[in-house]
Amino acid sequence: MMSTIRMRRTWRAGLLLALYLGSVIVWSNIVAAEDLPPIECPLSKAGIDKTKLKPFEEVEEYIKFLERADRAKWQKPEAVVKTLGLKGTETVVDLGSGSGYFTFRLSQAVPKGKVIAIDSQPEMVRHVHRKVLTGEWPNVRAQVGKPNDPGLPPDADFVFVCDVLLHVRQKAAWLKTIHSQMQSGAKLVLIDFQEGDLPEGPPEKIKVPKKEVLRLCKEAGFDLKRDEPDLLPYQEFLVFGKP
Image (tube, rainbow, N blue to C red; front, side):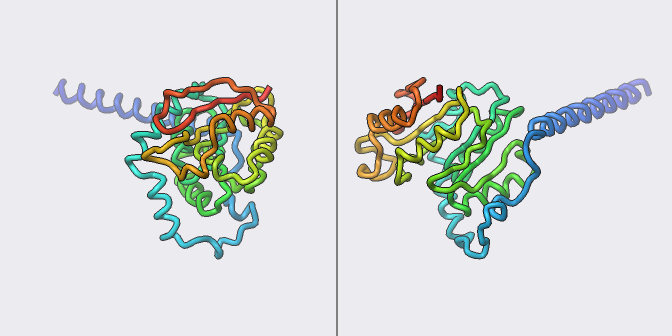
């Protein structure tokens, strides 16, 4: 009889603890997202005609390519996020976020901050937005950006750009626009493929040489803060600051 009473008390105590921890988690998620606007459709906000988007089947194939399991072997997403040295309260922009490969990893690194996923492809924004609507990522918002004007939030502490610069046509003007939209003290993180014959990455002719990246960023007004040449096997990892 006494053992039964003890078991009931233990079970009740465990239940109360679980309820408490659950309320703490929910509350922390609410606090993390309290500065974010209500979830709304970013495509509607940008005035995009949803009937003209690419078919789901076509987009899903591209998403599978971006999210393929073997990418992590050389992209090292966990190591990349760790190297950023985030404190957990920052506002991070994932510029050119694509499928959200880094978006949701960054979200976990800033539980009391927020992540704004910006992409010029509405199909990618739609994909990220649908994941946000599940409620599992309360500190993430998706946003449609223009190819020549990303529309960065003024409170961004980090602007994270991975494998994007090589796709930008007017690189100098684009970087200057980014610089003008960032607050003083904010950081720009650029990850792009190294020169040379590599097993991964785009054709050599569209790559941006490291010297060119450094020149463009300097002319845009950025100061080089960090260079991590040994972090990734096929890509450069550069961190710039806005004075």
